[in-house]
Length: 384
Image (cartoon, helix red, strand yellow):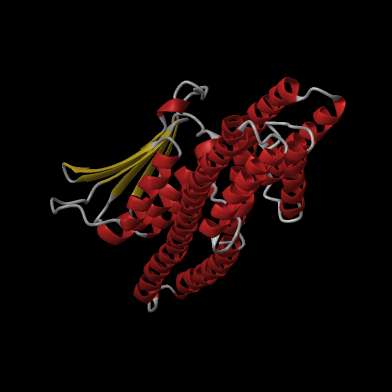
């Protein structure tokens, strides 16, 4: 579970970093270019250029801080600055594009309000229109020009910017919800993985303990020494299971295929089952643990569900197969552990197959991508 929490936090940080990079490259360069063009076209003196540049830079600062998710300290002062730039641009410098900064900062400020955003949007548009209309005090004879360039155009741009900001905010809310659901799904998958591993450990141990106790009962009146040995092995097995459970809880458990192979052979021998192991190649390290899980789960299933007398285990660089007799002709029982393993193997790029034919049961895991990457060596066969 701790690993799932860490993965969730890391995923959130990664997603936010990617969104920040996308926003920076999507919004800042075009806005900076448009602002520079407006300053170059509209400014006739250095004073006008400085005033318009102040409005552009203030708007860009808010956008940059927005992409970083840190605007609480900046947005209100920036709104005041851009409002002042608009007022000075209209009444002092006759700058038609002085509203550029407030059309960036104003819509963002409104989108962050907890309530009354509609009223705030109307208020912002009314403010921009009223300031623009004040230009009539300086040029009373140019009513059409003032209404078009200082009232209708900046007010319309601001209204469109507000609508786009609301749409953008809704889009990112959907993204955030999707990210939260994905994180919840990751936690759910981790719980399933944990439950499956716990089932592997506890279920496997309980079946082995049952097998050894049954054997000890049979030998109780004929071979006390063997009974004591079996009980010692049961105690050691229970202690090992406790250790594995602790390792699982702290995300430190790693299956070892060689150890699982030796354990499977010992269990089959104890149950009177003959075992043959064919090693065509050493399995790739990437899939060693998965093969160990497949072998452990299959061993448990054979001891529980089959009347086996022979088992053949074949290892290659890209796969493992376990074949046992005594499967009978009845339909396959529902093997929940192998169903979970099939998903894990599939997620890692492999395929897990389970078949029942001619009285035999075949379980095989194969990773086709590893067939050409593992060097072959002379096959070894271990018979017991």
